[in-house]
Length: 115
Image (cartoon, rainbow, N blue to C red; front, side, top):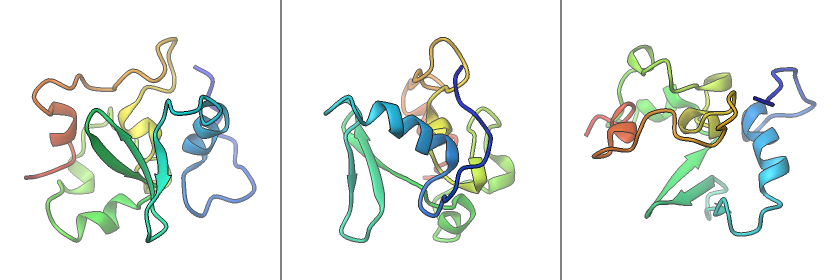
């Protein structure tokens, strides 16, 4: 893969890996479907849904409907404790961008969401 764990100057909204992903992939206009909500939350849309990027998982879990941080599948990375690109997509393989868990019957979603 081609992600680098070295620190960057400022990560206030997203984790350092998502920043690196967006640095290259945001140039592919329309591919990532990235937008900000009215509340300033970065969202990634695709496959008929929209998912936040940059939210701290443990904080989001306090609202209910999520599995505990400790029980999340280790394939789902939460860099800096945040939901980011590498939470759902591979960043460390020749197939970077591939889902970390196949989306069969919302299986990937249900690794974090407890609905």
